[in-house]
Image (tube, rainbow, N blue to C red; front, side, top):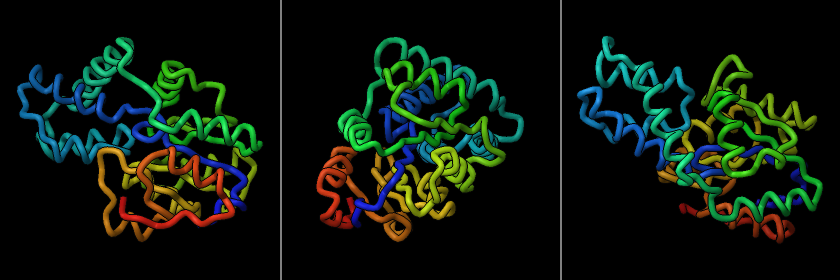
Length: 229
C-alpha cells in the first residue's frame, strides 16, 4: 500500500490512539462482583469497538433482560475513570510520533470514536492530545455507531475530503467494518483483538503498532507490506 496519495487520516481512539481497552476490561471485571455476575471474557471482548447501546445489548444477551445493564455500564465507567485519574492511561506506542509527522506534513487528522463526546474529550485531555485533531467525531454526533459507516463518513466530510483520499486507523473489528463501509481504506493495528481472515480481507494492511504506520508515512513511496500481524 502506497500512502503518498493520502490527504487525511482518521483515527479511532480507544485501543488505537490510547491504551484504554485494557483499562476498560479491568474495570468491567472489578465491577462484576458488585452485581453478582461472573466476568465473561467473550462478552467483554465483544464490547470492544461498540457504542454504548451495542454494549448494553450484549450485556442483556449474556446476563438476561432483567440485568441492570445501564447501571453496570455507569459504574464500570466510574471505575475506569478512577484508573485514568490515577495515571494509568497513556498514548499507544508510536502515536505521538505519527501525529507529529502528520502535522509537519500538513495532513489533517480526525478522530472517529464510539465514545460519547464528553468521554472523548476527557480521554484526549488526560493524554494531552486535544490539540492534535482538526475534527473530533463521536457517537454523540451520528445516528448510528460502528460498524455502520456514519462516524467515518462524517469525519471525512469534516476534513473536507473525499473518502478515497483518507486512510483510517483502527484496532477493532467493528471499526474496520465501519471504515470499509464508508469507502475509506483502513489499516488495522490490533490491540486486544487479533486479525482474522475477514479483517485481512477488509484492510489495506495489518501492522503491529502505530510506529509501523509512522514508518510507512516516512517511506510513503514504498508500499507497506500486508501481514497477518
